Image 1 (cartoon, rainbow, N blue to C red):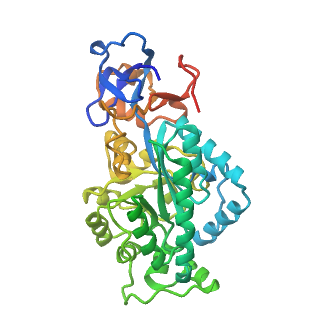
Image 2 (image 1 turned 30 degrees about the vertical axis):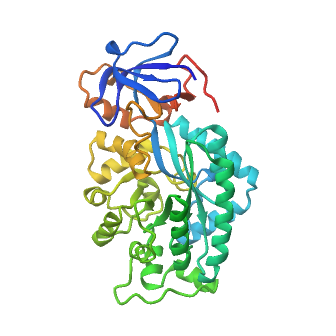
Length: 430
């Protein structure tokens, strides 16, 4: 890889104030060598030069929750309950072959790059996203899902999980691809399987991810043993949970009981969480993947974003799947989070860059434009007024309002993985 020098109307490092007419120097290893005013950071001899006079350059976006193996599937439309929606997803997945899943994962990864996303935290059980990340030279964590709501299934599920994860680690390893474990959700994983999979993952040094406190049906199942998921359990002969007293229990409390929560655990959604649940998550050091558009699409409610942030919990943004939201657009998620959390534009952008990296434990390597980190970056076309503005405060606003089509260049480790026709230079690879 050659040296690369990029100059933009504005450079947004995220961990420092925006730079007007800034530049970023990328070394031959694909890492950031320097960031500063273009007038003070000249391109070295032999460097590939890219000038972006009408764009802002910011860190590559970090999507903390995807299901890229579902790429290409249309939203299901109206269903009677979230439990019915889950059943619909299972049926549609059964119709796909391994080749279908891999093709979907490849396209999903390319779609992410086209939207400025350079790192994903993906959940799936086909193994296709791990394979696509390794094949295309992507960056992310592929959490392999494990299921088993009947306690008697725990041993069998664990044996299959261990075998599949070992296979994925051999086939899909690399400096930018990490395998994780995802005991799927409280309605699809028994208490014994939660405890066993969390313990096993930690012994193996693998990160955890779990869908948690997402829907009313989930809370009803765990708290009172009622609702649509409880009905599904009964029809399948799955024993109900032991009573938890008149007040019931929350899904967050249930995972705490089973030793799942911890600094290595990414909790996805966390919509139905009260102050006690937020305190539990904060005490455990767990992180949260906030998916506001998916939460709204399923009418799950509004996650306590302000409370999570006030408690010091690491929060990143996720899109969930195309079946939930139709199109993966992390900047749209940031706009939604801004409204829900009463955030500034700069704070909303931080959630989908450095905040997401922190939530995944990857902030030493990515999430901001800083020397030594991977040269992951996205260039976003600016309105002329913002590109020429002297006030740095106007730039985050303009970037936050951008559409997917406004992403004109995406770099991953200094490599071009997406490029609009208006940008001259090296063609995308992968």
